[in-house]
Length: 204
Ligand code: SF4
Ligand code: SF4
Image (cartoon, rainbow, N blue to C red):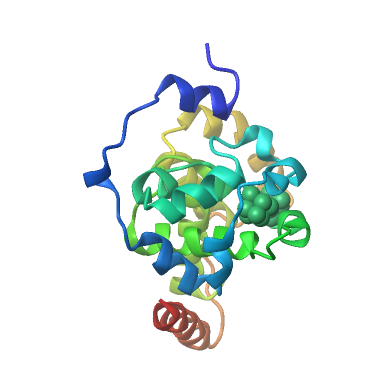
């Protein structure tokens, strides 16, 4: 029985043939992450050693950098690593080649969401997507509808059931409105989000 993300990766190990690689992937991500230095990585492993959550990742930061360079697009975008990154910047500070590894992780998340290639029922990208759509629609996040969608999309109805007593207590105290609430001038938020999306697209 696999006990960690790395064990799970080993259990589902699959050979990738050269023809399946995306040779332009490294350049593309390097451009998005201001990371011309990406290709100067010496695979020293300092980033993995300093990362506080690498134990839970399916690929360590060092491996992610190597895989990005070599064009393992699908493996990288489907990995849990990019979603587990806590953006603590330790790796970026310690890297002897000054590679902005944290920015690479951000760029990979952005690429995953834009192209729709990410672990489909994994809670972190699902929550990020649903939060974004909620704010885009109504100008603010509404917890109850957000959590219902989150549990349904991660196929975790038991999680919803388990959390329902707490949700009920919050609702009784008026802290958890059941329906999506809008705000004044919500169009302004939508304009801001569209501009941010466009800026992200232009950087690509
Ligand atoms: S610390 Fe920098 S040079 Fe070393 S493996 Fe990580 S990215 Fe590469
Ligand atoms: S920024 Fe992300 S990858 Fe880098 S050390 Fe922190 S958690 Fe690990």
